[in-house]
Length: 122
Image 1 (cartoon, rainbow, N blue to C red):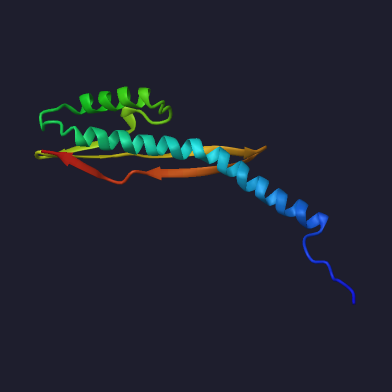
Image 2 (tube, rainbow, N blue to C red):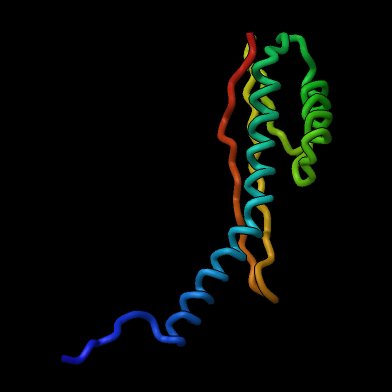
């Protein structure tokens, strides 16, 4: 009675390891970008939750974003990038931007972010 061995060969292990290593590399490169996006969204929600009055100038909202972004170390989005529109007693805030993440040599990922329209005000 012969026992037949099953499993991965050395080449199979190397191929699986290379694929897992590449996925790990992409994950490690994209985590800071996604973390920054989440910080931008959190800052925008904090500004909306503060319920600024309808008389609050847009420049003050942009300045508030810049101050909070400095604290959270957001470097690729500033208050100038925000689209803020006042409609009566309410305002709408959104931002869209793209980040290019280098992976290996001349290969890179382009990740586009859009917060959608966040509505706030009294």
